[in-house]
Image (tube, rainbow, N blue to C red):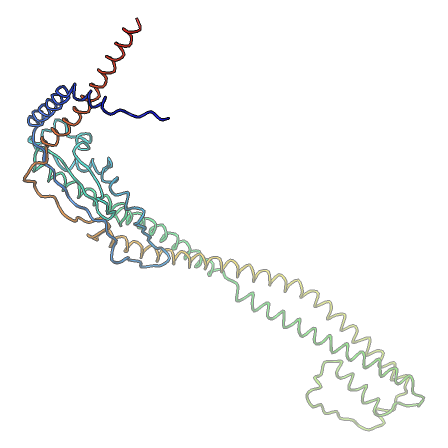
Length: 412
C-alpha cells in the first residue's frame, strides 16, 4: 500500500514560522526598493536596420555573374552587429559625454550597453542601447546602425575594393592581349601557308598527271600485247589494213596524243600501212612495248621523288595551321577576357556607388524621454518572492534539524 502524504504537517510548519517568512520577504522588498532608488536612471534607445534584397541585379556579362544568397545570411546580421569590427567603428566614430558615466570608452564598455536582436523577423535587426544619458543612448544607437549598414554593404554588396581587384585583373588581361596580338603579327610576318599550299597543289597535280599517264601506258601496253598475239596467230604474209591502223593508233596514244580530240592522219596509200609482214609488225610492237615500259619506269621513279616532297609540305602546312590556330585562339580568348573584365569593372563601380544596398536604415533612434530603469517595483517584487522561497526552505530546515535532535535524545 502506498503511504499517504499528510499535508497538515507542512502547513503547521509554515504557520509556526510565518512571521519569519513574511518578515524576510518584506525586508528583502524594502532593501531592493531602497537599492533601486539609489541607482541612477537608465535610458534606452533603439534603431532599426532592415535587411532587403535589391530590386534589380546588374549583370553586364552573363559569363561573370554575381550571385547573392541572402536567406542563409539573415541570421548572421545580429551577430555581425555585435562583432568587434562594427564595435571598433562605433568607438572610433563617437565619444560619449560625461553624463553617460563611462570611465573608459572601449569595446568592453560598449558591449555592456548594447543588445542586438531580430525580434522574431529575420529581415529586421533591432539595435538597443542603454545609457544614463538619453542623448548618448540615441547617438550611439544611430552610429551603431550606420556602422552595421556600411559593414554589411562591404561584405554583401559592391565595394571599391572589388572594383580595384577587377581593375587589376583587367590590366593584366590587357597585357596578355597585347602579347597575344604581337605574337599573331609576328607569325603573319613569317607565315608561309599560302606558298606551301600552292607548292602542295602543284605537286599533287603533277602526281595526278603521272598517275593518269601511268594508267594510259598500262592500257596501251595491254592493247599492244593483245595486237601482237593477234598478229602471231595470223597466217597471212602481210598485215591487214585494220591491224596496221590499230598499231598506228596505239603508237600515237602511247606517245601522249589525246585521242579524245579529232586526229587527222595523212596516209599515202594502203600499201604503206600493210606492206609489212606480221613478224616485222610484231617486232615493231615489241619495241613500242619496251619503250612504253621504260616510260612507265621513269614515271614511277618521278612519283617516288614527289611522294616525300608532298609529305614534307603536308607536315609543314599542318604545323603552320596548328601554330596559327593556337595563336589566334589565344588572342581571341585574351580579347574576350578583357571585355568581360571591363564590363565587370563598370558593374562593380556602379554597385559600389549605390546608396540602397542589402542593409538599409529603417529608423533612427530618437532621444528617449522616460527612463526604463531602475525598475524599483519589479525589483522589489522579485526580491520579495526570492526571500519568501528562502524563508520557506529555512523553516523546513529548522524543523528537520529539530526533529533529528529529538530523535537523537530519545535514543539516548
